[in-house]
Amino acid sequence: MEKRRLGRKGLSIAPLVLGGNVFGWTADKKTSFDLLDRFVDAGFNAIDTADGYSRWVPGHEGGESETIIGEWVKSRNARDKVVIITKVGSDMGQGKKDLSAAYIAKAVEASLKRLQIDAIDLYLSHWPDPDTLYEETLGAYQKLLREGKIKSIGASNLDANQLRAAIDVSETKDLPRYNVLQPGYNLYDRGEFEGELRDLCISENIGVITYFGLAKGFLSGKYRSETDLGKSQRGDGIKQYLNPRGHRILAALDKVSAKHNAKPAEVAIAWIIQRKGVTAPIASATSLEQLESLIRAAALKLDSDDVADLDQASA
Image 1 (cartoon, one colour):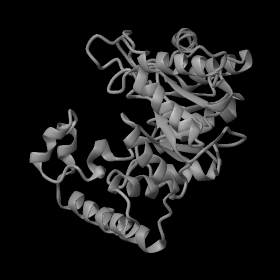
Image 2 (cartoon, one colour; image 1 turned 120 degrees about the vertical axis):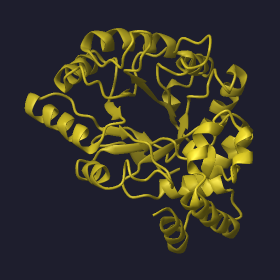
Image 3 (tube, helix red, strand yellow; image 1 turned 90 degrees about the horizontal axis):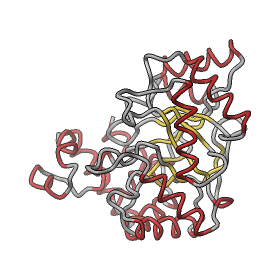
Image 4 (cartoon, one colour; image 1 turned 90 degrees about the vertical axis):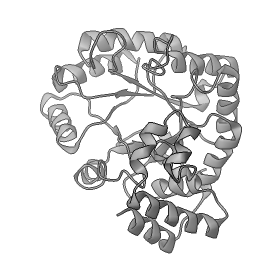
């Protein structure tokens, strides 16, 4: 399978990243193990998680996803088969988003212990922390890189000005640089990434791993009216997409799906994979059936007419 390089001298990953946000939440341990087994067997290698997954679930404290991934890696002796991506900076009880050096030093040890590995392949700043200077955060990463506890760094949820500022600090202070960005991006939500931010990532050779590829499930095509919102716990979040533009996008997905004998979700993910500047999208699955659909999406090649239809509908 084709591998894509994440940023300057970066890690090589297949063009689809498995989202671990569901592990220990809507996918129990056995299901998570089955999903990870099949994902790797299909030739993919990158798994995305975060220390905060799944702190939002009643009774959870965070780290549940990392723990399941760590148990799977150990039980399958799979460390050399996967690229492990995790994130730091979410509120894990300290009451705020935190990228201070002291917090990162503590959090990385907890993630390494849960993941049962010696080094994290890609460590991301999960959220901007307005109270901490980039110099402090990047300095903390420099120490971890030198100690061999992490191999590469990136950031999630930065806008173009924030990413530019972080790069400038790296250059002027001789500190490690963010090699990967993780923005939200899909057929409906295009504005966060396209434009200045994408141009910056391309010019600086920064790898891009996108999330929310199905717009919280809306682009699966299962939600066509407000009566469908009860099909998901995330119905309230999907309601925002039920408007004329959303329906135009679904119609275009239906047209392209019928042409390729594919599902709307597969077309939506294939569209992201083929976008300029994107290394790979993150996609989650809670069943083997859903995972098989994602695997098909990674192999689906859209032609110029397909892309034009989708671009026009979602413009």
